[in-house]
Image (cartoon, rainbow, N blue to C red; front, side):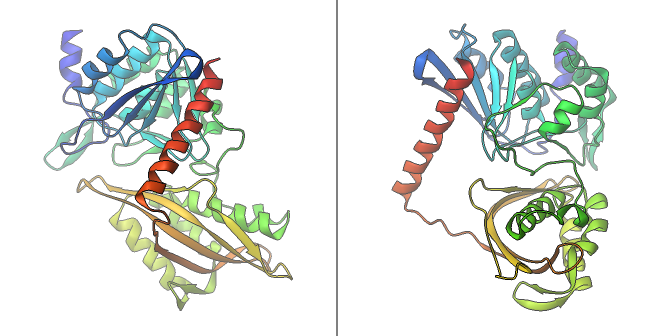
Length: 364
């Protein structure tokens, strides 16, 4: 066991540089339940912090909520093991993201939940060489042993570890169910973000113009989160020959070249539509629709360890006159905070209260 633990210390799933430890906050919930919030990158020292904070929590009426891009493999596995031993539930809140080491900890939940628009991502274990990350067979063996202890099938283990360390496998609820990984929706409606279903224009011929345009844009954004080799070939059929791109009339091929440059710079891209931000209005004839909303994005380039994240407003004009929907205009603009600091704190408080309310229902 000590030899295995020593090996784990040199393995990581997502963090290539030193990062600050995660914040671990324990909060009481109505009816005697408890919510533990873990936010930020996992560090090895977080294991002892987590163990200490949950030591007196012997009741299964505890839920652990995650928001993290990953971190130390050993921290993810050990925290996941503690969660399973305590029979805690795990949840990724609405619009949240839990990847790599965080995803392993989330798997430890006796019951697992995903909020609307939440994403959970996996890839193989690796060791970091001078020239970049290299998949580790011994690390994958340790990872597989942990997943086996959780009761996952061989099919599920292969699914969770098959993706190279330079990429990531984003798992949706349907994906989880398909591979026998027990998970449930935190809220009734599910987001299409992170779905493994490819964008096919012919899928959006039915329904009202508003519904067709909205579903098309949601699927387009979800598809753009896929690996470049999968995402780029499908884009050509989704854009009109002429597109108003960034405010100027632009040929389709120029738009695609711009997308290709972004894909070359950032191998991993994740876009999450903020819940409740999407609005759609259509012309009276129903031939064009304007779809607006707000996206949170995260970029990662494994070969350089560069990362970027932010929030932008998006606006698409979708043409519906042809056989299948197409983008005829696309604009991204900086997101401006619409509220003062006091208002944002009040909103954060309400969001937390909503999460606490959902968790309280889950553990009853």
